Length: 330
Image 1: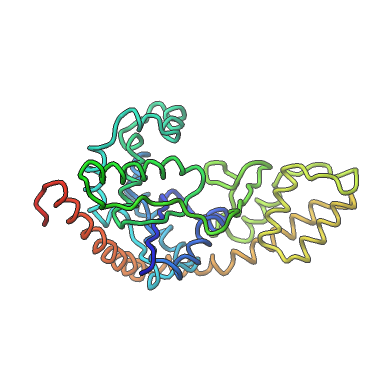
Image 2: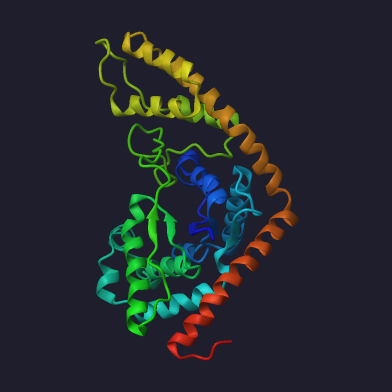
């Protein structure tokens, strides 16, 4: 039997190149080798109090983009979190065994308190227990996550272990963080530092058209150019080369790298070529996104079928959990 993998993404906007090379590309490989559950975490998004129309639009967008990137609903279970209500029941049980002090010490919660002091809600505090419920409802053993989620993963393991200990059972496996390769691909942003991200405003989205891509790339941070042959690249310049290494042909990368090392680089030419190569990568995905987004019947069917499969797994777990706790199993 294939090992179970679970991963989710909050519906907060379009997928960008960082999402694709970070998470989605891993999903494309995992769906062939594991029993995968990929979900759209719309309950998690409620901590920011989105308008109902925004939730529906964002869920549709992320679902269409997942499918356009190549996640196959025949190979992996793709579902919307709120369609599987058993997750909320397990979330309740885990919260009963979670302690205020340990939740308040979670780094991501402390960051939110600092950044948004006027919106410190219970959903932010109990984010780790909902994330744990998302994972252990399917008894997942592997979860592909970034380093920023490692503390929440440790909480998920703690909650699984605590439930087993309290009730003296072996119900939940302790899920492991999972990376397909030793070194994950880090896609840099266009602002000269850090990684590509929505909140940083430095992202190129898979849905961006050719004109938008060119405008963004041409505004990327550069300097006046090297004056010493074979000098080390500043971070902003290395970011451009890192992007080119991801989307361009090796010959293209080598050409501009040689130009840099010989102090003959023309950043304008490099950025024009990079924009062309990024567009060539995004264009087929963009066309597929637009095609799928226009097909509401197909999106509804994928969501319905995914929810049905996810609920079969979730209901089995909840029946077992209710019996363990002492409730009537329905």
